[in-house]
Picture 1 (cartoon, one colour):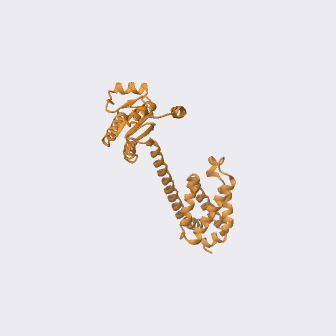
Picture 2: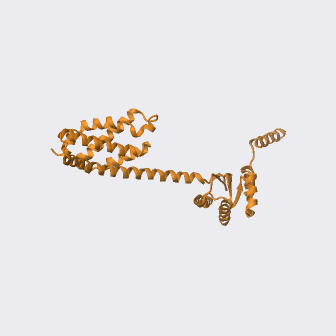
Picture 3: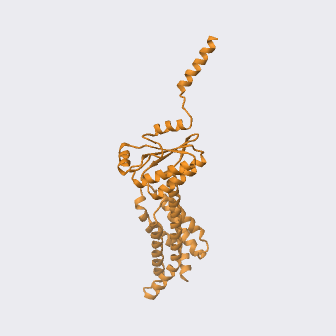
Length: 288
């Protein structure tokens, strides 16, 4: 009986040993959030995939890919796959040697090479798929964070706000410029309020990027208002000799919004004023 037949014929015993050894060693840091039943279920699914790959001779790789994706989606560590395969390799070699009842060096090497020839392609495939799926998730998260890092929010017809939070570097400045220009055209904006209340430091580079963005907005026929200039930021700008006279600046978003209303010939009428207008109309009707 060759190695493949021996392992397949005794797969239940080998899997039982593997599940006992596998446990949750690679998941100890996650033990508080992962139930024992979930770990057992995944271990048995892992074992079934390993055994089925031996039966099919590596012909059905979709199951490997799906399992690697599942592990990534669960947020489980890379070590779960590598440690699991290593334990399965060790238990398979031990079982075969026990069955053959030999301590001959050549036999040991033959068994080890035979098991490795089967396990190594599985390990490579699972590792590659795990990495590919993980990188895909990171890329999607990066795109989501980039969109959140420079949002353009329409607050009223012809008026939009771009709140900025955190440090602005060159890459983020490019993203801000792209979102700003595309948003101005898409939303048919006449006035953009760039709120830097959440920007901790405004140095020469940051100011340069903001000025560039304001100039680009002006070329599209819109006006850019810089709001959220705190006293310490104002002092820094003055000390650095940065010229922000090319576009309006306001200390708060409220004041900037009031200016935006003026520039777009708009005004806000409160419900109280509306009530007074209705009362005046009713009074005039009563008089008639």
